[in-house]
Length: 434
Image (cartoon, rainbow, N blue to C red; front, side):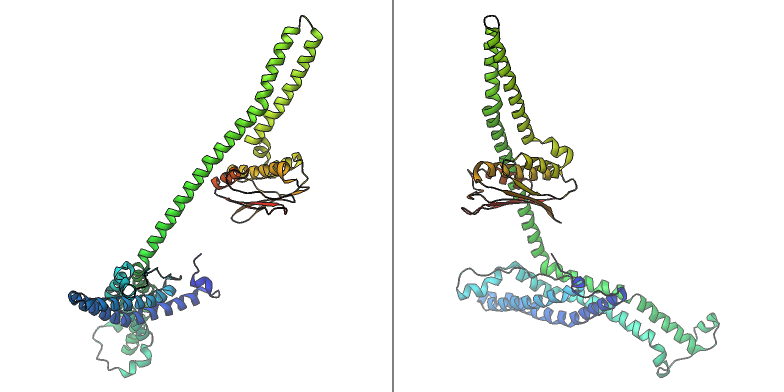
């Protein structure tokens, strides 16, 4: 997060902030004018001499020295424009020689684009510096000279008033009319002093910022865009992987459970049909068993449907769904889930499946006597924690049971971590953005 100068200092009234900013902008412009003259002479002279004598190799060290001096002036300028722009201006990364050779380290700046931009800024910064200096000097001179005119009017020889201004205003006192006129001019300059000085300082500062940090910020934006693209690709791949794992698990569960029961049900009903005439009592027994298998099949299908889209999660929210989930777990669950406002369906679904999968693994593999489930909402997201006192040894590596859960969390833009030392229990934490 970028820290502004206004945030770093104590709270000030608007008038005091304006006066402070006026002082900052004025000194920036006034000191920038002579500094621009110096950098112009150094950069232009060094560049001209260096290019002119480069053919005999003498110019290369001169160019390197000029680039290094320009870099020093650029460092000073970045520090100066920070208070004007109201934020800290970072220093760009300059090229450095990977090899340890003295010659390579010396001449590496000749291949550094930012070093050349620093020198170009040193050549051309005199233009905005001069314009800003003229405006600021004029407005300060007009303000001070106009407002203090009554103090030094007596020392100025004044010719006879032939303007007729005193007749227009109804005053015969020419001195009073002259003072009123000059003080009015001073008031005009004083009223417009802050916006003019501010505009002049910002124009000079933005020119310097564009030359000294524009390319660096553009590179940062490109890097951020590439990182966002990589994150999006990772989330897409995780979503595809999580969906594939979920489909394979659902297919396996249907094949091992309801499908086998339905096959047996069909066989039993066929046997009952054959025995209705010969042994009705035996047929009734078979039909009764088939009805029992039908109920068990329906229970399994309901359990599978809860794994796909739990109705209680859709209807009553995450807290109610987790309460029902904890009640069905074979290991005692200590649930800490305060009332939450409804979140995005994807976030609620991911949080539910994190807890569901974790409790399933606890019941099957951990040999735990208790498990604690905690759900906390913070400013940036949702923190889901599942901790048990089992044997540990859980992992997010491919081939383990939690790998698919990790893909599901990453597909939602979150992060899943597991702390599971052998013999010390398992702590699973998922951070989900909201």
